[in-house]
Length: 432
Image (cartoon, helix red, strand yellow):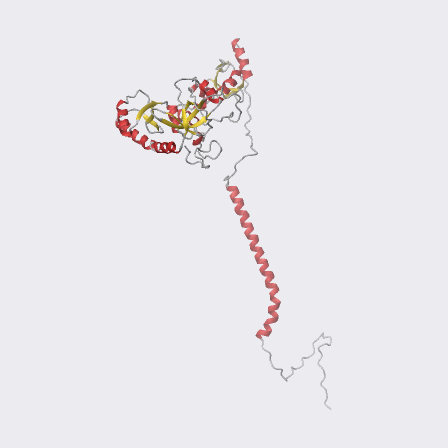
């Protein structure tokens, strides 16, 4: 009975503990908020237990004739058709009594079946073996129904835990004569066949899926009462009558159109009735829409294209004047500010790049590279200047070899004009 991708590893799924990534183990799950309250009178406590089958796809009520207490999530063996069936306890206690009252089921009815025992290992082995047959049985049953050219769509096949009975759920627009189909199914699957027709919405609930809101379908998770939905609900909410957008996966109008309908109806009570046409000196003003969030009514003059937003108070004044036979000269529409509100938080700016930002980044990178280049050049010059004196001192020693001293003396230079006498030649010395 696990959901197949539950991260907790429990045999019955995560049970709303937040470890399931798909939510399929919580299908039609109910929180029992009275489970930890002490029972004051055990004799007056509810003896009926709600059992869910096929991961919440179907629920039924069984009587607990024994003195054993069953908790939510326990696998129990119950009475079936000529055998036994297995299900999971989904609800116990006083909340079951409220559900019975809601569905108009007698708590002390004679026809209510009983819980036999807690499921043992042998029951679980037989149950898993027969449940593994359901997928192949659904594929084969569709092929047989298509061969008989029957106008029906098979949704789900549920085989009883002991493998003696099979329930085939289908949807069809008209009545279907499936007498020959039952004979073929009985010979093929060796089961007692039960054909059960469900509505289009119930069929979508059994299949499941993801809605346009990004969440699992309401009909497959928590919604049990399917109320009628009409296009009037969309008109009250100022929605465009677009069949593709207003239809769900079942092909009918979305159930969520009724969720906020009461709020819109309460808000529309302040708007005046019979205000579709206003008489003016320029012609008739026709109502085109109502904005319940801003309490405005939008009108357009006959033959014109300009929209005039009027307050509820102004519309009532014009209606009173029209009732007296007076036509107004000016509708006196209000002026709407065109400035948009700026969000200062929760703004996702990831990936918001413009050409100017890219040009600034490129220019900044170029300037940075130029500065690094200039810095490297200046460092090189300083290094060369430091090493230049050492090279000059070492060059004479390496390139010019030492010459032997010569006896010849250079000739004396004649004295130059303006000389201070430092370079005057010495007179020759006489030898004694």
